[in-house]
Image (tube, rainbow, N blue to C red; front, top):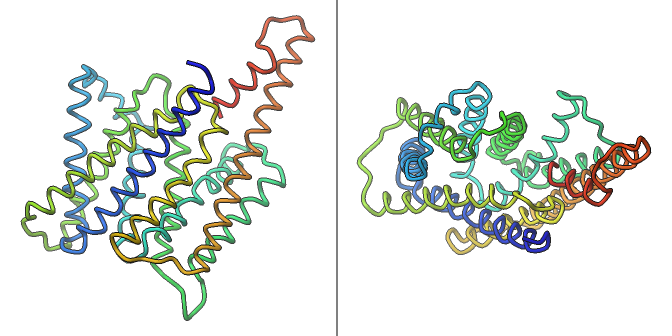
Length: 320
């Protein structure tokens, strides 16, 4: 497959994935109007576990579930469960598009954490992009006495735990199957929902609610699959910007399902977050290409075999 075709496949896949995530979020928000949140999380999580587990069994990979007990996978699953708890708790009380906007600062938090924890080099341009992105969240959170939305703080907590999850994803042992990672995360989320039942009054869920949550489970599982597919064999700089399509899908779902219309300050905040995220992604891609080209030139000077500059650039972009 040519690089251009691979990139097109990745763009289509990430667009489908973001639509699936938004569809799942809208359904959870809708069902949580009638049932306790913990019950909703538990039922959807149980369905997701059954779905992913069935796929693992059909593919003959169920024995690989042992990877889910590795320490880094367990830690990642824990962060996934916390992210779900924070996100769904805020989702019940916030407009879908506004919450999705706040979550988009997670990649910027991830960049900052990489500096603090792993001493990665980040130039002033990316630090400026991070500052602009956090300024954008203030427009959404509105930290003023008359307009402050306390639930938005849970959205920020979700962005932080999502960044921690993504940081651990980079540390997964080689050869760890993606489906097993998804299965472990689904189990952790289901357990969190079950734990919430200790202080909630659960009641039997009617068939319409069960059918909606089954659709949410399928949407979530499909979204995770397409998100993995989106980043395999592609140029990250060409595909990653399309993750911001989630704002479009979340806005449409919020408007047509709940009648939500973002205010102008939230729109300004969204624009700042998207712009800062895109610029930070651009700078990271430029830095990766420059490092790859320098490595190729150094190898050529030593007379050792190595990839050409364009090949090294593509390889670095794929790793990034």
